[in-house]
Image (tube, rainbow, N blue to C red; front, side, top):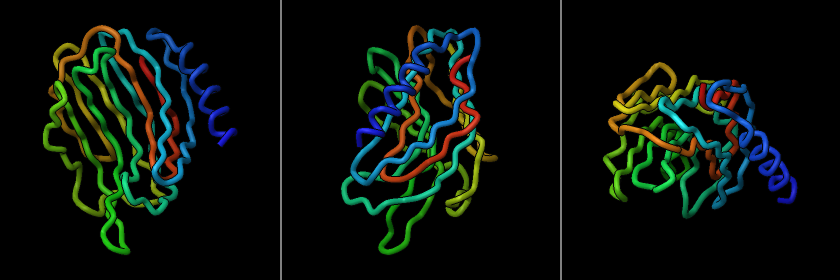
Length: 178
């Protein structure tokens, strides 16, 4: 646990130095036990907001209360909305179902999640491109070969986060901003 906190602190310091003019490429091996989560966060100032890279589900852990997920997320300082894109593992008896989702929340109310691709389109051990972009007119979410519009206008300071829970997700070639 101490190692995880140390790695998160180092990653947070690295991310805090990112500017919007030049995006740095990062790798984040997000390994979080069941019922826990890990977050890396960087503030983007706009007017365009972007997180791109690759995501791979490496391992899942038995969860009881929370879902196993690996996502990229945008949320403004005031918390008035959130756009979250990534891979979610749904328990189904002894089996699990891996899906790609786009979730949008506005003023505390969640829109119905958009499923990207069909069930079975995403599997453990494979790597998929992931990109979430926003601006004043909304944006686009892309996971693997599937895309969906994001109907949330963004402005001001926005937190760009990489989040995982209940499993190991490898995020590679991550670019936050730029």
